[in-house]
Length: 293
Image 1 (cartoon, rainbow, N blue to C red):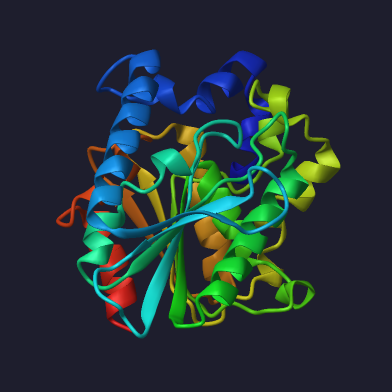
Image 2 (image 1 turned 45 degrees about the vertical axis):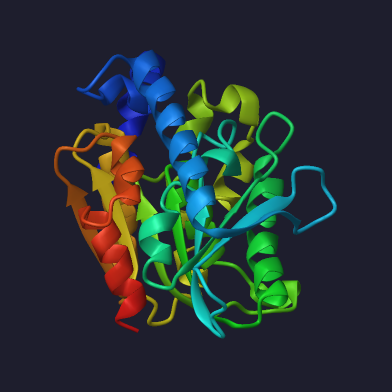
């Protein structure tokens, strides 16, 4: 079966397929990661000079359980909120590199929240998924003037957004009004991951990988009529393309409002970096999703 194609790959090839930096035509594998971190960190600093920010809000008791809020200028009585969940294979990056896309949002009256979670090896997958869910609930409790929540995640962050979409919110005491989700270059089946170097830090068992795989819980999704956009970069690896297509088809078969976007000319890194630009195709699609409501 097409969805099981990864099982035919040897360990070396599977590691290659799940190494996004190996597939960028712009620069070599080490340079593209370094450039990505510099670009997103610099963009976040710019955003903090332009926005009203509330930094290091505790959403839980853990040392790393903090979130940053980027608010539009003025004192809006009500505003929509985009929650951005960073990637980094659940073991790199932080909210300090995650505020880069705020300016186009703020110019249209949209607030943004970014958060930290316990990255591996300190954090494990069950905890990380729960932290994302708790941060969403926490920001809604702090800001009741939020008119709707839009989720956006990149790479591992897209996985975490997909897990948020299949949350039983009753146990969290508040059900977010999620009005849209954008998943960029994500991983939706964690089972192949346990056979790669990525799992050295995560140490997931097969049981944990299945329980935290969005592809396994599509029937539990609370998306309703919420539009879901699944995007993949032209220069993502074949496995990333396969994962995105498989997840898209699974949601489509359930009759959910899902669309698919192939981003020409982009690799795994600049596909998300360009969200700092208002005229970028994904920025425009996000703004349309939020502002057409």
